[in-house]
Each structure stands twice: as C-alpha cells, then as structure tokens.
Image 1 (cartoon, rainbow, N blue to C red):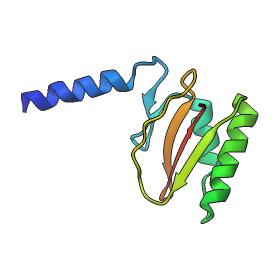
Image 2 (image 1 turned 90 degrees about the vertical axis):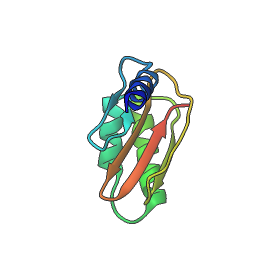
Image 3 (image 1 turned 180 degrees about the vertical axis):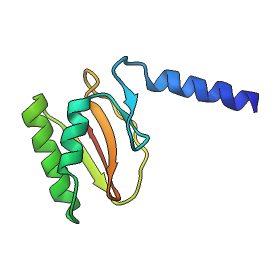
Image 4 (image 1 turned 120 degrees about the vertical axis):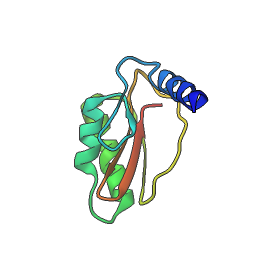
Length: 102
C-alpha cells in the first residue's frame, strides 16, 4: 500500500508541472479556466463534430491562436504537447472533450 501512495504523489507532481493546472469537476486535468468555460458551453446535442467545431471556434476567438479539439461519447486517454498551459479536458452530459493549443 505504501508504494501506491508514493506513485500517486509522483503522478500528481508530473501532472501539475505548470502552476496553473488543476483537476476540474469532472476529475480531468485543465490548465485554463477560460478554455474550460468555452468547452462546457459548447458541448451538447448529439453532433460530436459540431461540438468539436464550436469548441475550436470559441477557443480561438476568446484565447487567440489555433486550437485542436477531440469530442467523444466515451472517455479516452491522451498525451499532448501544448503552449502556455492552454489545454483542458472536460465531461458534460456523457460527452468528453479535449482541447489544446499545439
């Protein structure tokens, strides 16, 4: 049991290499409150492609620069490189979304 605690502490340290990252209400890592807000307001309905496009347009409009997005009905793992902490994953009404600035 002791080794599990050490591993958990190590994972948290790696996750939060940037000071502005946090665990959001859905239990996912997010590094920008404004991006999280845009993502949550854009999710909904059954059109995943439309939701991804809405997130991308909203993020690019409010935060500037280009964004990449993924939206799915099931949870997924990811690894990404992003700029200045502009990365976030959320869940709303059974839809999972990830957005980041490459």
